[in-house]
Image (tube, rainbow, N blue to C red; front, top):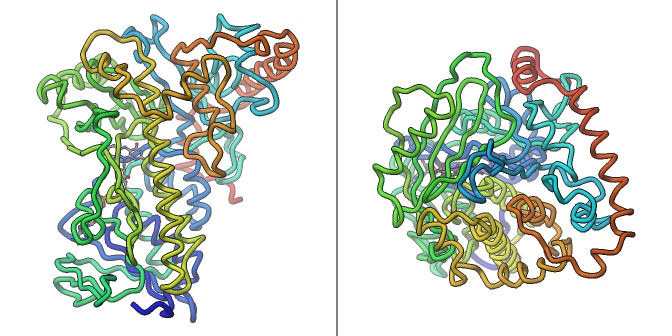
Length: 522
Ligand SMILES: Cc1cc2nc3c(=O)[nH]c(=O)nc-3n(C[C@H](O)[C@H](O)[C@H](O)COP(=O)(O)OP(=O)(O)OC[C@H]3O[C@@H](n4cnc5c(N)ncnc54)[C@H](O)[C@@H]3O)c2cc1C
């Protein structure tokens, strides 16, 4: 491509969640189908289905879906969606049960007063005998009681308590495709790409398909999943392995029916620590999606299946269980995400593990940055390439830090897996330094200074203090005025929790209502 060539045609390789979300956003925001608008083509193999997992999202998904114009009611009716208000961690501290007190919640809503007063110091002074999250946020109370985060009269995408979604990943992909093709003018090519054709300077010129000839373009987005056809296979951009920090490399996934069709739907992802990994448990209206993520260096496949089956039986699932689907991955992310006229989004860019559901959030952030900074010419692309690589290297590093926090603070001693996680050599330096600072003060905004952090300082507080991390308060933290300043927020939170419990419907009741009647349009 020549430097002054305009960028007019974006070609996306891959029709999983990453490909369709990116295609829809670019088409919507760059007026695909209008004269002078961007042309957006998505090529998807008819022979390689999308990975079909990835059922938990962050609240950012509400903004993304609103941005692409997909009605929220569609999500509930056609993608089996339910509300996700955060994560409920069980057994992470000592390997005991939730009933024995080994559990904590990481809700999506920021604590009331966060950033205004030192809530951690106030909690330690006045309410240190109660779980941190329950003192600073109403949402754990809403989740514990199984309530939804809004009412039937709350318009689409609006919230009473902050929420993302659980949904069926395969159905989500289908709805995104229908919307992108029918309403947003995305050109869909159902074919396999066998060859990448290059310009003399090394830029990609076209993708050769089996039935549809060569598809030329100006910018190529690699959404080809773990195969990483363009950025990995074609350009040879390496992956930065994170296996020395985050050991999990295998997942087992199963879909499990409810005992009765009207069983409650959990309004949060239930993450239960296991001897060499953890299980996820996601409640959809029609079934549960359950999986076991573990380190194959610490656990055999057969033991992992047994532990998954034991979890399902213990939590009310059927006795007769199928063999789970096995997915192997190498935790890591690309050395560069944007290279020449190619940018990777989704699994082709990296994947570390499903804990805290950061993968789709990174897809959303990637698609948004490509859309916001869409280069007008090839010359501009080099500038955007540097900015994108810098931003996403920072984001992946922070994701790794945040996930590692969950393991590093555990006091479980029932396996090498947990002991290895506490080894200083397996702790990223930046996280180790922050943990030292947090001994005497709470995480705050300046520790995470980018405008759009994947995980804000409040999330660190929820996990740190949920895991039982107790700071040794500095003189400033011990001063009574700090407790005085925080106390009104704690009172208001308790009041809010009572009001929400009185006004919000149960998750099952609201989800069933939306599936039958929809939500008021915004
Ligand atoms: C066990 C597990 C659990 C997860 N849980 C979560 C979660 O709870 N929350 C979350 O946010 N994320 C989660 N993720 C990640 C999430 O699944 C992915 O980020 C998301 O599905 C996006 O995948 P993708 O579109 O990049 O790749 P895929 O879905 O794999 O799509 C790849 C596409 O590329 C196409 N393709 C590949 N090669 C070619 C070719 N040569 N020619 C034509 N087409 C080609 C395929 O046909 C397919 O359409 C999880 C991942 C795993 C492994």
